Amino acid sequence: MSDGSPAVEQLQARCCIAGGGPAGMMLGFLLARAGVDVIVLEKHADFFRDFRGDTIHPSTLEVMHELGLLDDFLKRPHQELRELRGWVGEEMVPVADFSHLPTRCKFVALMPQWDFLDFIARHAREFPSFRLRMQAEVVDLIEEGGRVAGVRAKTPQGALDVRADVTIGADGRHSTVRAKAGLETIDLGAPMDVLWMRLSQRPGDPKQSLGRFDPGHIFVMIDRGDYWQCAFVIPKGGFEEVKRRGLDAFRQEVAGVAPFVRDRVGEIADWDDVRLLTVAVDRLRQWCRPGLLCIGDAAHAMSPIGGIGINLAIQDAVAAGNILAEPLRRGPVGLDRLWAVQRRREFATRVTQRGQVLIQNRVIGRVLTARAQSFSSTPLPLRLLRDWPFLRRIPARLIGMGVQPEHVKA
Image (cartoon, rainbow, N blue to C red; front, side, top):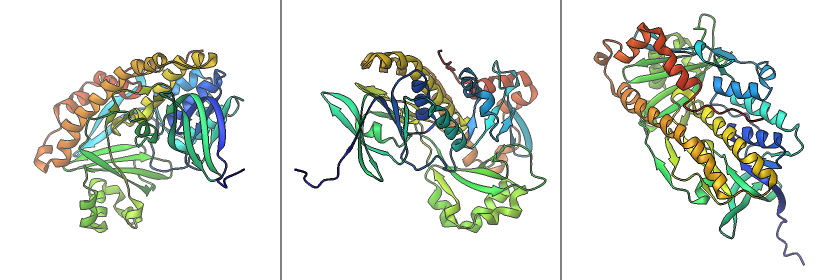
């Protein structure tokens, strides 16, 4: 007889992916393309969430080309960033020139992340072995005999258990999967947080995304077509102090860094219009356990510097697809294959994070604590980039392609 408890929905798959972000959706697509029975669980009802990474880097666009999707993808509204520049004091300094990259697309595409995820989901659904469950939030792991055998999730219809040969944690920097798995995190530290907001675009505004470095302030504006997505960088843990000074003072700070928006800072009507991104740079010491692998931000949270987090996550997904697809087609996957993904991607992660920490400590932290006299001249590295155009290829390569670009195996 029934005890009156609601029935738990039961599903089975070769691979269950927790998280429908860039890493999870790309890996789900790649596995389904290879004929692997895969289910992706996404806790939200849709992909429409503002203030997420919007940069699609040349290496990711190269992956889209390898999948035969590039032409269709670029039909979606986007902007193309072919050079990265920023204001340092009163001087505009070119930093990175993407025109020399050995890729088909020599630019960073600026596209809302929800458009990217929706595009991948639409094409993944063309494969019969792909399933996507929205509003399915992973809350626990299923463990049997010392290995992870799937996940438990909650949905509007009730509890859901998904059993799988391999479970992938792709549920972001606040990953439930890695927390429940008890995987050790190495915290590399970050001296900053970021306040996100939006301001309307108007005739006469600059025609491209830009950044501004002034004594005590860093402000980034991303062109989203009809509005600016703005990032105001503050010292770590400094949001309460910003709020204590008051909204008017904050509006004036924004106008002081970017004078051309002075006529619209009133669009920041209250603190609900300002979103806090708590910046973290960390990585797992071990990305896997028997039956479980973490990728993307769940394995290594990145700083927003360079907008490379989404790029690194997608590279993880491509590597995982290359390494795991064929073994998953045949049956259960051993721990050695999961370790192979970490070995493939760990070097790129470590080098990228080391570079981010270096920039955080030597540039970001100093700018945020600088006084006006510190900006009497442009720093030497930026003067070199300004005066020697060839050098701009170096940051372009690191930002646009990453340390170790991955390519889709047929």
